[in-house]
Amino acid sequence: MKSIQAGVLDIAYLETGPADGPPVILLHGFPYDIHAYDEVSDLLAASGVRCLVPFLRGYGPTRFLSAETRRSGEQAALGADLLAFMDALAIRRVVLGGYDWGGRAASIVAALWPERVRGLVSCGTGYNIQDIAHAGIPAEPEEEARYWYQYYFHSERGRAGLAQKRHALCHLLWKLWSPSWAFDEETFARSAAAFDNPDFVDIVIHSYCHRYGGIPGDPAYAAIEAQLATQPAITVPTIVLQGADDGVDPPARVDRDAAHFTAAYDRRILPGIGHNLPQEAPLAFADAVLELA
Image (tube, rainbow, N blue to C red; front, side, top):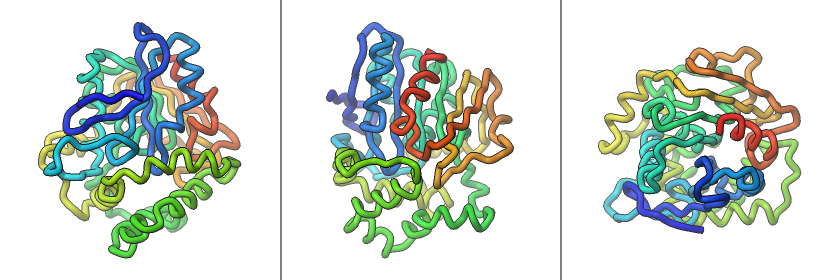
């Protein structure tokens, strides 16, 4: 485990593989951590790839440098963190891979700074940039039901529930979102330790309230949010991986995200796989990264 000051954070990260190998940054989602990439990292390192896996803001040993910095979980903050991490490590161009929150950070950097990205592997929702301006438009009731936790987090009861019962709540989400994945308690506990970060609750609550336009973001990221509001195209080669058994973002029969990608693009649906795709299907994820790296 290493750490580096990047932007407003001291980011903890795991690095494997040769230092002179082609760089790849892999980003976890909510409620997961860097252990989602344990097997993927081993596979990539064995293939000569320099693999970097950071803890996102609010997770594990990653910490804010100042107590005065807003504990924002908005999408622009995640993208800015990733870009700062790349700058701090002097990484000029990179292949990015991620899912859930991590896939959003990767998609943002790929869309806004394409000259820094050689390729993108995005899981779950392929075009993972939020359309906050239209977030108030109701989805189909079945889809809305899958977002119960997001509405829960809009209430003080939900904040208290996350603070007091975070491990139990996140354990339930793991089961609901990956119904075919028979993870054991040791596997969950290894990742759940990352949720004890002192900023975890504030970051999560802000993320799920901000994405619906219910609360303001950090003014420091207003310019990035304005760019994201235009729903920019992703112009780098992209492979989208989706789990057929994903309990929160099941793949649609018609790929409506494809129009957002203007370079080489491929969508692959993996049978028997849920939301935590890199940990459930590490070989498929690693293969996709290697195709781009």
